Image (cartoon, rainbow, N blue to C red; front, side, top):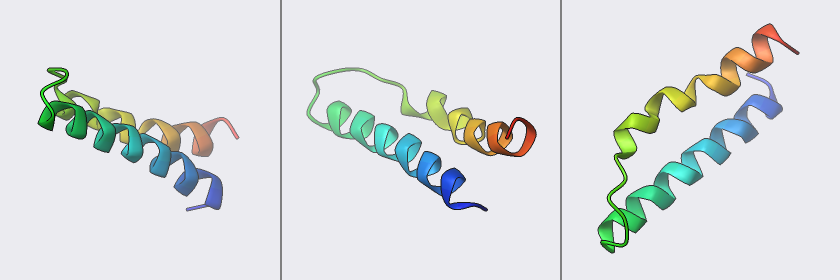
Length: 50
């Protein structure tokens, strides 16, 4: 994997961790498991488009 893909995966993972933290503080009711398919978007994007 290229550094660009890794950077984008880190960004997606950080947003998911933020969602988990917001759920733990009971500020929101996000279903973080619904965001799991977003982990494949950077991989597909960089391998097909770039």
